[in-house]
Length: 284
Image (cartoon, rainbow, N blue to C red; front, side, top):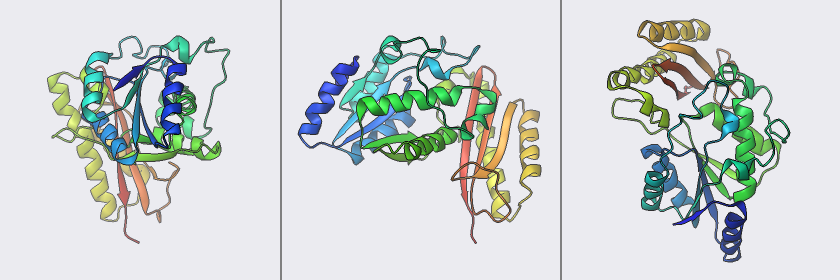
């Protein structure tokens, strides 16, 4: 596996592969990799001749008081995991290479509407930072396919909208969430949980499963359901940002006849802010 730190070095290697006719799959990450990331890389390996993985802790998507400085950075361990998973190239740029200008002076990308709801309501500017860095990485890597996990469902919808709106020649492939044995969605921020909190965190997935069961049995009072499940999590010790039932395609509020739904939750437990979701496909 090659490790490249400069954009010029990345483009040079991509050019060599393109001349050979190779297809390229790309997995963008912020590092501190776990089995969920490895699953994405292995799926990328099945989809293309070459696999590029980036590790970049993107300052643009962290707000004031968030955990940018404390975000776990485990580059040596990450490189070993990627090598074992079959990645061909690890791209690890410095912030000065990605953002040579002051953040207030540079061009940014924003997907209106979608970026201000759900997590965007509690993390203003977060998805502007996500869309900007992903577009930059797409321009740098020029992949045929980009692979994302479904745990960050709102991010996935935003990136798909950006790709469609800006006519980017990359196919977005989503991969189901990888979970711990107790149902907890794998996340780099799970490292913030104590052992007791890790056990309690499994209640997020359990509450999603309960809501899915209710929807499958015909319940359609979405607003009341959201309040009930958020209250249940609050009673268990979570600080809930939202528990929401939305349309899968665009995250808009559903009507009672919508068949393709997604249930989303974001909640804080100790130092960790946890997100999760379940997709629901109902019979007509």
